[in-house]
Image 1 (cartoon, one colour):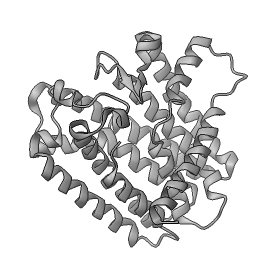
Image 2: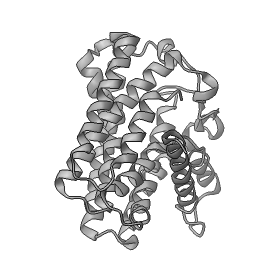
Image 3: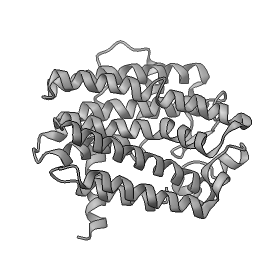
Length: 303
C-alpha cells in the first residue's frame, strides 16, 4: 500500500469513527422540538471532509502511542465539528454569504427557513461545550478538559473565529489589505484548526512545547487551507466541491488570488505547509507522520 493509499485508508477510518460519535452526540431521550433536531442533524450529518475532528484525533495519536488516545479525544472531535457546522449554517444565511448549496445539498435555511437555521446553529454551538465536557468521563484529566473548554470559547469566539467572520464582513466593504486578509483567514479559519490540534494534544497530555508546536502547525495549515479554498473557488470543479465555484468573484470578495494572483497564492500554500511540517517535526512527538501526510494532502487537494 502506498503512502497515499495509507492516508486515504486512515482518513476513511477516522471519519467513520467521527460519524458514529456524531450520530450519538445529541441524546435521543432529550425532549427537543422535532423540527429543531431535524434541522441541526441535517447539517451535522451532511458529511464533508471532517478535517477538524480528524486533526483532533491525529494530534492525540502523534503525542502518544497509547491506543486509547483516540477514544479520549473523541469528545473534543465531536465538539469542534459541532462548532464548525454551526458556523457554516450561519455563514450561508442571506445576511452573511447568502449561499444556496453546501456539501452538494441545499443550505439549511433553504430547507428549514432562516429562523430555524439560526436556532439550529445556536443549538449546535451550545451543545459543543456539553460534548467537550464529557471528555473527563473518557479518561481526560479534568484540568485538561477545562483547559480545552476555555480554549474552545476563545478560539471559536470573539477574538477567534467569530472575530474573523466580523472582520471578513468589514473587509467586504472595501478596506481589506493583504495584512488584513491574512488576519481574517487566521481567525476565521486557522484558529479553529489550531484549536483542534491543541485539543488532541491535551487529550494525550502533551507538554507545553508539544502544545505550542501543534498549535503552530494548525495555524499554518489552517491558513494554507483557506488560501487553497480561495484558489479552488476560481479553479475547482463544482461537482467535487459540492458548491458553486467563483462565488467569491461574483460577490466581489477580497481573496488571496484577488490581491496577489493565483501563482503567488499557490506559492504561499507551499511555504505555509513546509513551515507547518517543520513545527511538528522538531517537537518531540511520538509519531508526527500522519500530521505531515495530512498537511501534504491539504496542499494538493482539489475539493
